[in-house]
Length: 169
Image (tube, rainbow, N blue to C red; front, side, top):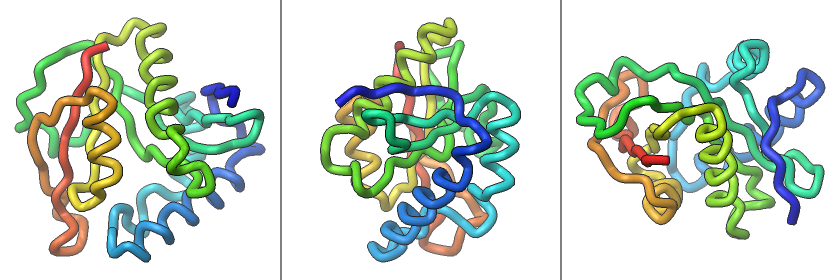
């Protein structure tokens, strides 16, 4: 399968929203309240696209995933003992449920890492919903190191813990 990571275009926003909604529904069916009503949203994706930070993964020319890559870090991350500097940060990373379970999650991360390295970044940081075992296993199998946990108090009680990860490129 040919994979291509490229900046998102305005004409892709509806497809991005469709994939995001299907991902969110699948997670909620598993009892995982990973994303709230306000994040990510259509407005979020449009803002990130306009900023040049929204990327899509094309698998054989079909939009299969989406991610925001930039330098912004959540204030909740301030107490994490990060090991590396010169980092790029992964936000709102998701893969179409139709493509999950085929090894594309790690390939998608690899594309993000290659792009980060080509831009001169030395590491990647991200957080993952603590109860999303699939995501946490994916990051750890992909060489990301657990750095600690944070709480997003804006999330419902019992759904606030997120694990922070980092990988040296």
